[in-house]
Amino acid sequence: KFVLIPGPTDPASPNILPRPSIPRHITSEFLDKIPGAVFGSNPCRLQYCTQEIVVLREDMVTKMCRNTIHFPEAGEIADHFTKTILCQAHLAPLPLAVCPIYWAHDTAMQLYPLPDLVVVADQFNAFTASYMDCIVTNPVR
Image 1 (cartoon, rainbow, N blue to C red):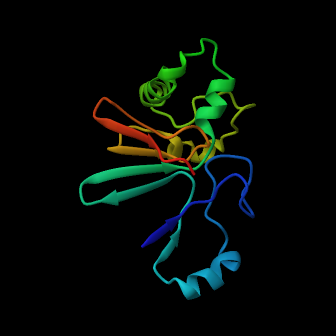
Image 2: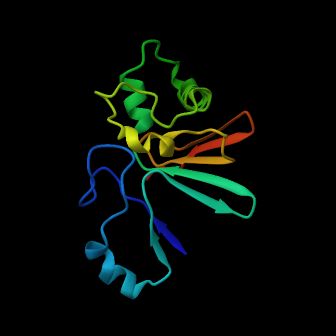
């Protein structure tokens, strides 16, 4: 199966999180050719055996770096980001002016209980960090 998640520049994607999946009228031809594809929301939660995986497609590391009070050292950005989202138990611990959240669906942004893996598709450099038995990775989109 292929899981496709809407990003900030995809058609019919509002500038607010969480984002709904891409509408069926846009994806119908794609699904006809690749029937195993699934269009999920952003963020998306996946269950693989006993592992819970959360996937977020947003430039969250970049936004957090632009809006931080105490900027971490160059080599510590990934660790700082990982600890921030896991300790806050939220995928977007930013002011609403920076990252608007649809409050009726804010529970989709929460990380409690902590998943086993968080994948952040960001333009920031690739990294993998671990904290409190949770792995946070950015494979670079």
